[in-house]
Length: 49
Length: 390
Image 1 (cartoon, chains in turn green, purple):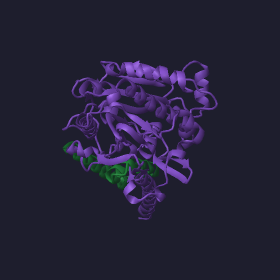
Image 2 (spheres, each protein chain N blue to C red; image 1 turned 60 degrees about the horizontal axis):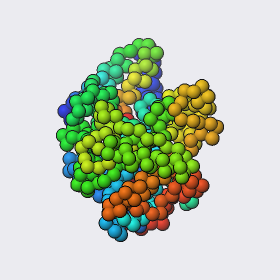
Image 3 (cartoon, chains in turn red, purple; image 1 turned 60 degrees about the vertical axis):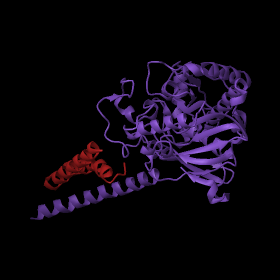
């Protein structure tokens, strides 16, 4: 249970880093990439997939 | 300044598109996970319990699945049918469904579980693009079922370890199989959700003095263990007799294989080793599970037709035959119903005082003739107290 919670915290942290990179990014190609890789983390944090 | 503004607008548009994808996918995943499947209780079902009543450690969890119990007019033996150990093998669940909605028991007790791993029925294979559900046409409309997966939903058990050490054998198994119900028997009370579920089923077998457990599965045609009964040592005679009788009297062939003593976690091995019950596992062919299949959709799941597999068969690469007629769901479900009836009949002939006499269940030829849907009852015409949900 503790490990599961830690993994959710880890997922939230990675999602935060991706969003931060998205904000800082200047290239549109990178921005699309960040959005795509963000989706599974959001779906997991919302407990949808 | 203008450049920053353009960037902000662009990022906002991308973000909105991303949110749109999350919402669309999320709604689909949510609906799939929460799809309720009706079960119209057969007049023969006398009681409905849950796995949590056999092991409180699982009570209230997603795997606190229903156990449908039919009590015969005369005392006798007890048979447990496990459906949904691997929900992505739908013939197993549907055959068990036919028993839950139609069975009339003359002697003994029948225990039926439709969602042995309900968690696994709420997700499809990650990255596999499987359909989220499928429907069976009936005389009153269409009944929808969750497609499911081989493994418990990661939303219920996560993360997987680097190495999965099976309890109590300490055998090292594939890491992902820590979420595979048929690699976690006999289970343990303080383990993962999947292990706890196995423990609850094992407790049910012990507390209810089950004589025979039959675990219903389907297999890919590239897998050698197919169209067969896998039997624990104590079930070999029964399985061999059933194999001979079915192959001689029905319109299909079924083999018999011994449960490997050194392969742990499987129901046919561990239930036999850790309880007094005879443990058997039935495999019917499911083309959708094959790696060399074509398009993975509902049609393939239910009709079992695939030109790539036919080609593979022509090249001698498969362990079961397939032609342009495929392996429709009626054939696969009918194999299971007939095999179960034959096993119960042979057991009763050998143990009259512990007999299990099951009536009103269609055999192979009847399921093929009438379709699976002919044996699924209309929930709208049933009183609420005779209706359960999976």
